[in-house]
Image (cartoon, rainbow, N blue to C red; front, side, top):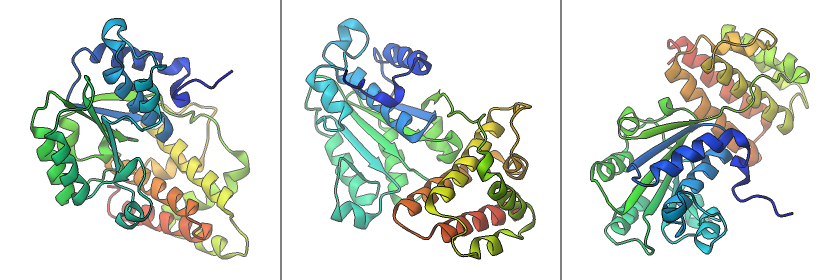
Length: 303
C-alpha cells in the first residue's frame, strides 16, 4: 500500500484543521499563519492548503482530491503556482544548491514581487509559503510587509512558525491564524534526565554545564538532539498549561521563568542549533552556545 500523500498530517488529529482550510478555500484569506505542530506538519499543512486552492476538483467537492497532477505536483513542491522561501537558508547555500525552497533575502523578494505582477499559470492562485522568518525588521522583511499590504486576487501567502510570537506583530496582525496540534510533550526521556538537570541548573545559575560538556565524549550528536527535544517539549508544556502531574522535567522550572517573547526566541535558537548539528558542528559546542544564549536572555529579564 502506498503511503498517504502529505503523510505528516495524515492522522485524524488534523481532520478539523483540514475542514477549516476546505471552507476557507471558497474565499481564501490573503495571509494564512500556521503555528504549532512540528516543522514537517506545518509544511504539509501549507501544501494541503495550496492543493485546496489549486486542485481543479476542489471547487466542486470542497476539498482537494490529492490524486490529480496538480495535487501531486503541489505535494512534491513542484507546482508552477507554488513558491517557498526560508529565512534560515543562507545566501551562499541558496546560490550553490538552489532547490524548491529558496532563501528569503532581498534578491528573492524582488523576484517574488516581479512574479506577483504576472497572472498564475493555472486557474487557481499563486501560493507563497514563507518560513524561518525572524523578528528583525530588515530590508527583506519591510519589502514583504509592503507586498502583504497590497491586496491581490491572484496570490495568497502562508506564514509558518512554531509560535506566532516568533514573527513580527505586523505580520501576525495581517494573518488568519490556525494552530496545529502540539507534538506530544507529555513523554519524558528518563535517560536524558541527568543532562536536563545540568542544563536547567546552568540556566538558573550559570554554573556546572560547561565543565560537564568539556569531558571527552560527554555528549554525542544524538544526545544533543535529544536534549534539545527535551527543551522543546518543556516549552510546549509551559505554553499549553497546566503541566500534567505525572510529567516532571527540571527544564520546565528553568524555562518557565521566560516571557512568551523569550520562549519564542528559544524556539528559534533550538531550530538553529538542530541545523548546526546536521551540518556536523561539535555537539558540545552547539549545546554550550545554546545554553549561553538562554542564560543571557534570562539575565536580561526573560525576553
